Image (cartoon, rainbow, N blue to C red; front, side, top):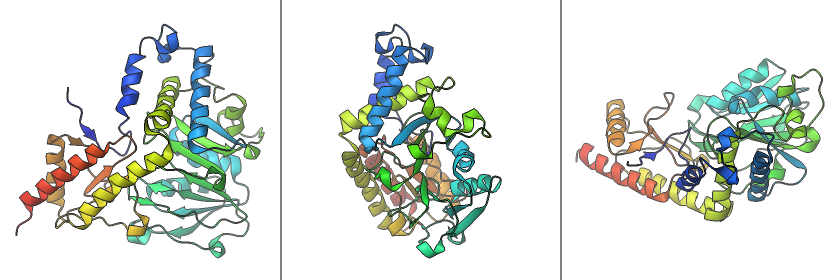
Length: 360
């Protein structure tokens, strides 16, 4: 068997250390004589798995004790509804930076006043709009952002002004890629399938004082239900949570924490952007100050040549590198689990393709 380099935007590659550990424990996890997939979520064995995962994540992100960690189902997309259901009273200020904020806006509008206070749609979302405090709606409850845009390859490098408002961030495609001051946010959520674990788990980090009893909300749509029941009000995605815990262990013990992970991620991104910027064939459309460290779109300017690149890349062992239909070209998602060697190999392939397809 030959492992490919998987540049998928999600579900994405997982660390081989995690996959090997899960393989070793497949038939006998935690000396239980069974797989995690067979365990009761009410068992002491699984209670240890979920609590250890939460403890590791709290250490990794230095999450204050007045924040709760929740494991929720429904993907990041359910959060587009759960957030306004739990927190929207007077209005939401949303900065539109692409596909995922567009979806969040659509769901918010079904539930209350929604203000799109800035957008980069006119430039096909190739930059992060810069706002001032004056752009905020006076009576809005919160400012909502997508911290890293998977499709368009943009990343907030500074938090937007939000004095007097809650700050809510979709970190699905950048969580755990760098240290984050959690206390600057009031709610962070992230679908697991990019940088945390397999699809089917969503992590929510929320200030405890925002957890409210609400008889009008269905129990499964109320954050307090998850907090009161250690994310086990119903049967949770047990195996997914277990894999997330292994990823946290890998980051903590094998990588040495998020500071080291950030250095590795910057090294990968910098070498790829540097090659693209000096290439005769490829270009990256994103404003340099807003470039993502996780998702790097690039194009040749010729759709047929782009298609040829994707085809030959797959044959060479670089898979899921086709860009999103709204951007075209190619996209290399270089999440935590993508090794430096994978990016180096991709650059060598890009050089070879350029030599073969650029006429002097």
